[in-house]
Amino acid sequence: MSSRNEYLFEQSQHVIPGGVNSPVRAFKSVGGTPLFFKRGQGAYVWDADDKRYIDYVGSWGPMIVGHCHPAVVTAVQEAASQGLGFGAPTANELEMAELLCKILPSIEMVRLVSSGTEATMTAIRLARGFTGRSRIIKFEGCYHGHSDGLLVKAGSGALTFGQPSSSGVPAEIAALTTVLDYNDVSGLERTFAAIGNEIAAVIVEPVAGNMNLIIPKREFLNTLRALCTKHGAVLILDEVMSGFRISLQGAQGHYGIKPDLVTLGKVMGGGLPAAAFGGRRDIMQCLAPLGAVYQAGTLSGNPVAVAAGLATLELVQQPDFYKHLSALARQLTEGLEQAAKQHGVDFSAQSIGGMFGLYFRATPPTSYAEVMTCDKEAFNRFFHAMLAEGIYMAPSAFEAGFVSSAHTDADIAQTITIANKIFAAW
Image 1 (cartoon, rainbow, N blue to C red):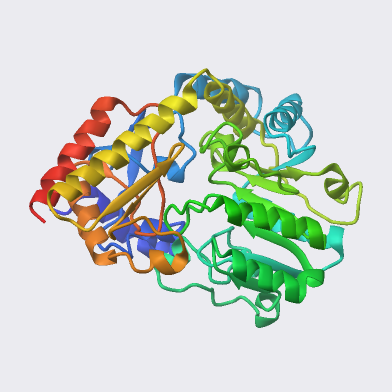
Image 2 (tube, one colour):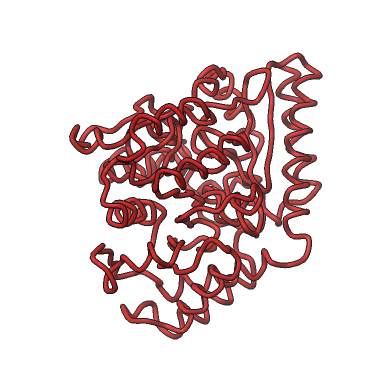
């Protein structure tokens, strides 16, 4: 008898392209049948066959306090009881905006939207409207959502399927995007020397998580800031993933770099669709209705999503929250590295804040090119072996992983014990 997961996937493929509503969910990279989840609690999720897993995906990052945290659920229930949406301003939108401006000093004004793609797409348009320029710079392997101009050598799902750019993106639009190597300071300097006066914006994941976890070199981030300032380009830090994940002030606070614009999502929605972009007042005032750069959204600032986000952001501001979260991630990666080393497996791992990366190579990669030297087939074997033992990790060798405050020392120890058994039989 086939499993409930297999039945649901087979049925889904008749009415949903690929059977999934986001490509990386399809397990196409790792093979096998994707899991259909029906509930989550704390650090655990249960699939359609009622099998429990320790969850290191966390809805791809948002579930930083775990699934169904009582404070978040209560906030959502209370908001929903008052109305699911109004298409008009609410007091909670103001509270969220004021909180984001308070936590992140780079944000002087902010606008709420519904997805990270919407945030980055609009930030690019805003930078172009502000500067009067058209060209943007992004970095190979970084993913900033699926708007046309950013699907050029993208990361994440695009890398998973070996298609670093997308069909349907006009060549004329792609031509306005210059792609450079992540962490390559000299390449950055040469590009600005050649076309600095044409660049409207540079968009970057300050901690890359969409080609697996890549830690930035401080010199790289500092050079970005200096060159954008010198040439009048807008520096956009895409903190959709790293925002409130690396630290309370995200990667910008951790590395002490001040962007002109920042994009946020995931954690700030607490598991519901919410995102934002914000930054310098003079740039943000170019947005309609104040300025000529248009952006709108029927569901922007949705009261239920905002309630979930506010409740989550209140929880992460508790004393030592990030100290504990970081310790859990380090405990996991150090334990996995030790287990692999004990059995002679070519493997490395690292973490920052609540994010972590696993690599089947001797040392953690620092660029897209190095990521591509990882043993993808070894990862696939590891993924399925861990899945069979009730450990759910991202179904792609090109995705960062996440721990939550709901994970316990026992969860981490169990994960390491299972990995040790798998490596022993490698």
